[in-house]
View 1 (tube, rainbow, N blue to C red):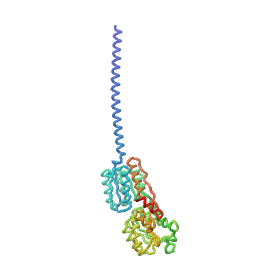
View 2 (cartoon, helix red, strand yellow):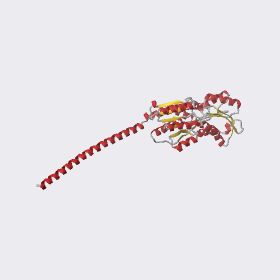
View 3 (cartoon, rainbow, N blue to C red):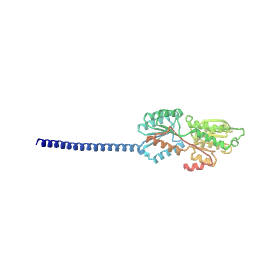
Length: 363
C-alpha cells in the first residue's frame, strides 16, 4: 500500500511539474510575441523616420545670389529653382535671396536661413575673399554648403578638405573661359587682327569685380592665350566695369577716345561686351573689320550679335549644367551620400559657327 501511495505521489509531482512547465512556456511565448511586436513597431518607426529624412519635398533650401541684376545669375537662379522642383523639392521650401552686392546683407540672410532651419545652403558669394566667414557659419550650424559660380580661393577650399567638411564648389574653371576668349582672337589670325601691321596686338580690358577670381582669371588668361601663340601684345587700357553694361559703355568710350589704335576689346562678361559694343558703334568702328570684341556668358542678346557679326565671339557659361550639378550636390548632402569638394563644369567657345546652336538651346 505504501508503495502504491508513493507512486501516486510521484505521479502528482510529475504532473504538477508538467503543468508548471506548460504555463512557463506559454508565458515565455507571450513575452516573445510581445518583444517581436515591439521590435517590429520600432523597425517600422525607424523606416518611417528614414523615409521622412529622405523625403526631399520636406527639406528646406536656402539660396543667396550675389545680385539679381546680373543677367547670367538670373538665368542660373531660375534654372536652379525649376530643376530642384523637378527633382521633388517643394517650391515653398526654397528660399532665394538677392544680396544686392552687399556681403554684410548676404551674411545676415545666411544667418536668418540658418535660424529658420534650412537643411542645405547654396551660396553665390558677393565677395569670395570672405568665403571663410560663410563657411564657418554653415559648418558651425552643421549645415552642408554648396558654393556656386563664384569660386573661393585655394586656401579656403583646402580647409574643406583638411577638415572633412560638407562643403563643395560647383562651377567652371575661369581660366578656361579666359583661354577660350583668347583662342577666339587667335583663330582669326594675326594678319587680320593686327590692323596697323606693327606685329603687336593693342587691346583694352574691361574687368568685372576685381576681388572675383573669375574676373582675375579671365583678365589674365585671355591675354595669355595670345602670348602662348607667340603674339606680342600691348595693354592700352584696363579698368573695372563691375560686370555692368552701362559702366562698360562709359569706360569703352573713354578708352577708344584715348586710344583709337585699339584692335581688340576684352570684356569679362557679355553685359559689359554689350556696353562696349555701343561705344564701338558710336566711335564709328566696325566689329569684324577694324576691331574685335569678345565677352563671356552667351547671353541671348550677345548671341544674336555674334550671329550677325557685331560681336566677334563669346564663351558659353553653361548654367544648365552648373545648376543641375549644384542640385545634385544638394541632394547628395541631404541623403548622406557626400560630394567631392570641387565639382567642375566646362565652358564652350562660341563664334558665328555655333552661336545659333547655343541660342536654340537656351531658348
